[in-house]
Length: 242
Image (cartoon, rainbow, N blue to C red; front, side):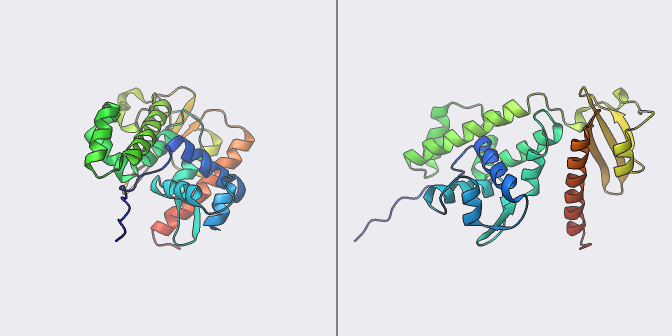
């Protein structure tokens, strides 16, 4: 009688840095359009659907960078938040932390080893006790370490808005025209992070905050307008307005 092949628990086959590079390749070709998985694989540089490309597509789904069902997939809004912002931008940092915590295994390891503060030997031993075969344990550990390294590099200077002392914020007398037009009625504040401003206005559910550089180029204004349109489309859908 044939012996069943040992299978390890599910985990992303690549780290988050590589996953972002792969989803950027898809976005550069088809933006957020729905595409067959075979097309997404080709955009990432593979000949089609095979063991390697299927593993990478699965990893992107686990990080929340792709979404879809069956044979159809698309770049997610979470991925767009990463792609659309430069290194050091608070919204990019938040999105990267979100994506890094999406895989169930990584969330479990973060809880067991806060900030990844555990030796490779200790984490590998733990994975083996969770029914990982040795090779899979090594691969999962590598993906986890690469993801933690990206989070540390991207979020080293990130400061959540809740950590900014209200007493240190003063109202800006002349808000930027861009934000004044996009979010009429918002109060605009100088940010604790150099070179950027924050536009804040209240909804019944809580505050909405937009952080943006002080000096935006015409191209960046256009990109921001496209992003806000995508955000509003999703917000309307979630609110049941379309």
